[in-house]
Image 1 (tube, rainbow, N blue to C red):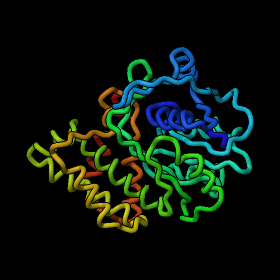
Image 2 (image 1 turned 180 degrees about the horizontal axis):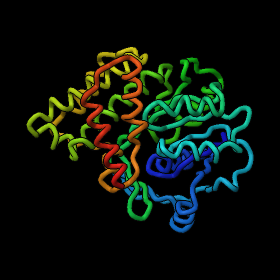
Image 3 (image 1 turned 180 degrees about the vertical axis):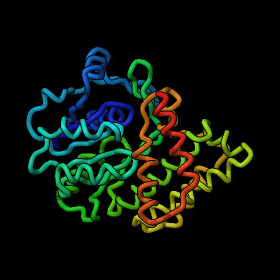
Image 4 (image 1 turned 120 degrees about the horizontal axis):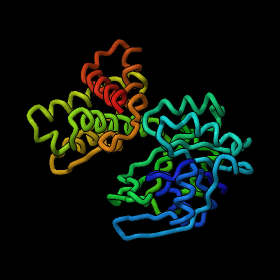
Length: 304
């Protein structure tokens, strides 16, 4: 299977490297700066098990040739419009596109551009970041990768995707209910991002502060009410596990949005929080805590 990994940041770099190491034909679509960096130093993975370096196949938008069987999109959500332009020459009649982005807005955007039959569901759970020299730093062993047809019908095309992905040294989950997995991932990451960005700290600091637990539970409840109104079929055991994970004061957690914010980078405010508010408005839901978070993030973006 010919695979195009759109992006070679922490997520794309890690999962693309694992696919390449498993013998898959993987090409990384990158910008000029990342292209030069990877050409000079290779793709470096720093994991809890040690350091690995590989020489990846690289391409830039201007040099893409031929169609790919699978395009995995791993950029930040605010870069999606440009990436859609970049990957267009690589999309053929049989190409499938698997986005691994935060939120859910990107699914409709990709479907409108390339067609509903080309977009499949995907998500990952990984604690990783890029180091100062562009190395991919995996901070914990966690690395599950979920994928499946958005309508739950995993046909022969999806079976081929599973065959390519399942032996790539990560925890793969071929799901027949990927939409619920996507809703639950959004519940987790948006709650985490909201409380960390608003409080400017990790969950341990928040939970051990006066009112911190109430803040986290309040944000969680607001988000759960929104996604339920939007079509999430609540799985009580799953949502209870998410809340339990977030509420553990012994485990300090932060979100990628919070880490980006503390470094002065652009953030996925509209895609992670703003989109929830739009959906809440559609159902006349009161979300005062989410509104406070959204104002906070908008002010940050104005001040960048």
